[in-house]
Image (tube, rainbow, N blue to C red; front, side, top):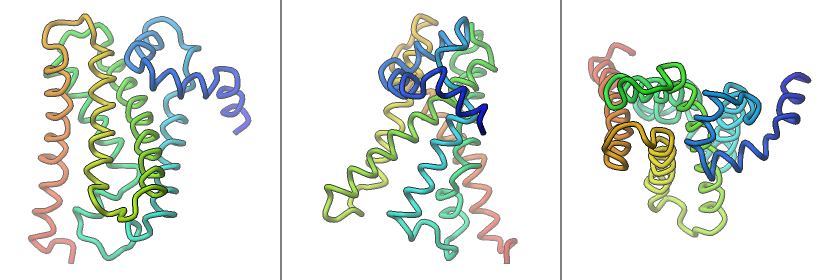
Length: 202
């Protein structure tokens, strides 16, 4: 625990937080290729982001932690495994389909997706807090707003990360992220729905 606190203090968690909002792709690229001292470590950073997200949902959205949910709803509310699985699938799609031969390699792509996932989660946490404070009917468009901010930031970060590598620009980045989400649906949510419909969990 003391080592984690020391690492965050020396490298500057505020620098990481602000830097990843302003120039996520460029900063992560620099971290992977040359300067490992400009960001805090990815694993504790994403752990804190996901813990904050879970704590917020438990505090302000108590219905999201109930056990009376379908398998799909349970997966959607899962605070750790599904986000990490989503980042892994997205990294594979990015590296092997849309940006094959990228200079960062598969490991760099996975590290990038972990940082982007953490930062997108923190952004969604801030959006949730804002909606909690300022929206009278908090159910209207809440999930859509969270999705828009999360995906929007992810696309922005991926576009910046791969700037200068091949053609396509924004269209390529948008297609890559959306295909990653589609792959998650096809390989995780659809099998879960089929298992539930077959009554294999009863």
